[in-house]
Length: 169
Image 1: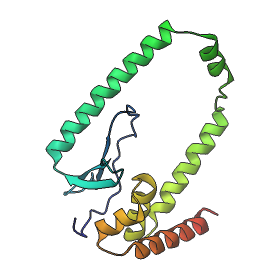
Image 2 (image 1 turned 135 degrees about the vertical axis):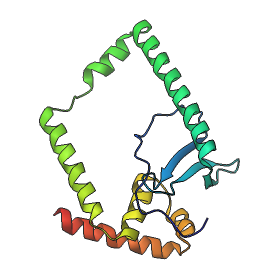
Image 3 (image 1 turned 45 degrees about the horizontal axis):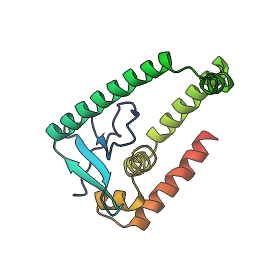
Image 4 (image 1 turned 45 degrees about the vertical axis):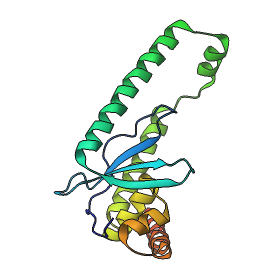
């Protein structure tokens, strides 16, 4: 992969739950630009993780497969919810602490502050932080995408985190 990447951040789609047997994860970078990129991440038979750029047509096909799987999982959950009420499931549901309105509002405010702080970072730091923390790429994968060393990526992310701490505090 070459070192040229769109400026905008990672996929705006919400993270979907996946079937435990789903062997891959798909995501996009620069979705709101003229040249979005589509990626697939998977582990091979030797448990080595790979991240490859794929064409939009393949991405759309894999996306539709994920939506079908999600639909099936939701249907399965609804079925189990109605048919298998046991003492253990009822107890687990009763002991789950629900988030209060105040806690939810504070959490949303913190998330908004974080997004605003990230937006103030230089473009390279912003992209690398988003790929590392929200795209779940490793330093090495980001270095391969950017055509630089793993140390340079780590340094950039460390500098970005220091800047974010100053902005948020």
